[in-house]
Image (cartoon, rainbow, N blue to C red):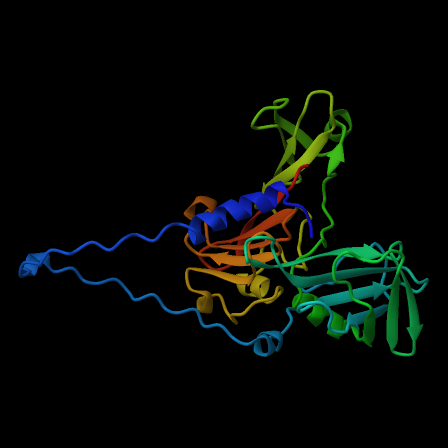
Length: 326
């Protein structure tokens, strides 16, 4: 299981605050006086229960036309879906014509000493396992015995089936970032289009830049390279998308690009977790967080957090992204 990264710690503290707060002790209520007409208060709307659906019904949702496969670093020529493994394990493997591959996998796991169940996982390539193909079956033999559940047998599928399988798996190590994760300050500031905004070595603000319509943040430490910590953008010129969704895409299409136990955002109420647990992979909805400027669909793989923020028409108009810096 992955160690607790700074982003995972942030998620854990947030969820602990809501899950472990002690319940208030009931106190006797005084006998109310008869209300006068001026005292009557119209009750607010009753919260609508979240309309969840079965995994089978959720998987039958249409896959958005914008949906893309994860970036494998090569053009895949075959697609493979794992047989069941571990506790609820899922895995998708993309393979090139010359035998290179990349596999994304996840499974359910109980976090030690808590009883909390999370979805965890990672990705790996042919450097960690050897693949052999017999007809429509692919088998992996690992170079070292894995210390967590890993897929071993896969069945060949079509690209359309791969897109659906990817949609039904949590967001997991699948980004192609438009900025370097680690870079020397002089090199970054010499990049065409980069405009310095502020710089503070070891300070709270770190190094801040404008780049292609985004405000980009780096951690800055004296004598060390810049470490990418996140960005905010409202510009379609900034080339960032997750599974093909980004600025200008409807919130419903964002929802339909990730696993979900609700079919529409209206079904999710004001706040809802689509999938995940405490500190592992997580997808959630928050219609009440006004600090971000709109309703928010968030996905995290415990190392990165992406917020799709919607305008009043339900369209993504802003993206916030935060990266764990070790």
